Length: 479
Image (cartoon, rainbow, N blue to C red):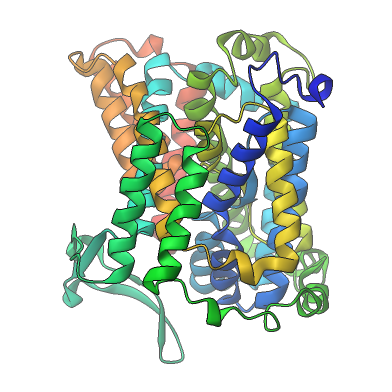
């Protein structure tokens, strides 16, 4: 194990890697239940998507760990699954089988741009100040996810501002509030919110005191307190409704559906819709690619997982020789695998930062995560009792750690500060890494043009900006 994962070289141990893997798993285990909920709204069988989520996560994370030897976990991406359901299926009227076919093609595109070094060229073209902004922005994003999951914020909305509601029967599946929604601090008058505060205090104290395994102990301790407070209801564990047998029986409906007559067989049958199909696949691909690039840059550089030397080797190497090469390839392959079994884009999870924050530095962390995902197919009812209030503090504190990247940005220099600000703020508040990168890139180019330094902007950034703007235009037209 030492020889394979190079533990000493990466200054880590088996116990640290295992603890990091457990931490990452619990930080992202919500996807086991959230992904089926979102995709089932599009007509996909819940239990089939549940098992497809596990299979895609296990395969993608194992490739990441065993092939790339980096501590990142993969699973169907939040945001991408919502785009799959609410935009592609509900908004554009495609079947979920056709949407899966688009995801599969997206995976093939990502594999192509990885093997041909296009993805690596994009990484190399990102200015250093923007790399720091992405790192800090992901810190904001991760912390915001934690704060939101803990229900520490209340959102009030002006009903007159509601537009674009998607209704299934009498249930509102999705609604847009535009500018009519206002966040506020939650009232501390209910047990779940109080549990989140208790968990945040416990985990913060453990982390500040440098207690070994602080994050996982915080998660476990908060869960136990949640049981005592009645927030976690042990009697609600359903060992039969979510059984592995029912999941396997339903998986036959989604497995390979992307290639059937209702999927790939009819996707390009209407010539008038082909441009729209191509642009939708592009939207999938852009979000997937830049979510992954942002996660790797934001979490890998400061921790040394991807060193400056490794980044330089990416630019000069051919094939899949560096950790970054292999990690990008693993991420690309996972999307197509996920589409085959029946789920939306599988991507590298920003919650991997929780395990990295706990000391994970090698692929052994990923192998542990993959093993826990596999085990969850049997023990999912038990895993589901870990409340969001227990994992949220881990994400908040990891976000705090990652925001240290902001220290390397020259905030007094507006030429550097403006793009960095927009990249980081939009990344967190729009709940999308790729959106943040898009806005940051666009303002970076605008600022350089205004300053008469357009020649400093890489041609790759200009091309990427054009694609981002085209993507925003298409989404505006089809919404």
